[in-house]
Image (cartoon, rainbow, N blue to C red; front, side):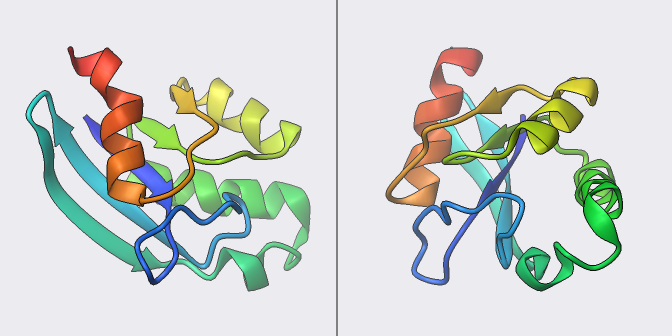
Length: 112
């Protein structure tokens, strides 16, 4: 399963999903994380460029380009939540602490 999570440079969860500066895309199996790649997305500065619809489209494009199948985050606004639900992506909220550990914990029940 391919999972996207907002991360800080120290490896912890960035509490800001839609305004994250960096995200990780992880390939996760029942045994744990197989690959982990981080991207500087700059969504904090891009958030207000072009309005909410343009920003949601930017996030959606990133997720589609990276074939993301689920999102793990601390929280997100209702508009972003709705957009991800419309994309059919499972969303695991309430993630805090180490990003890798949060991804494994969130997906463990899904992958068995």
